Image (cartoon, rainbow, N blue to C red):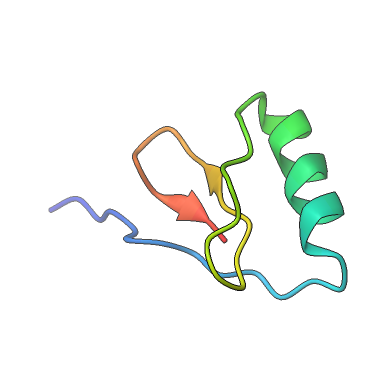
Length: 49
């Protein structure tokens, strides 16, 4: 059986800076803000918010 995350929420002090940092490390884009979240799209369609 495989496991797939729906989404992951990470608490940070500065959402935009942290999303940019993570996206830069992973080589993926930062998505547009969605409510209180700044998503980083991961490879399996699972955003880290």
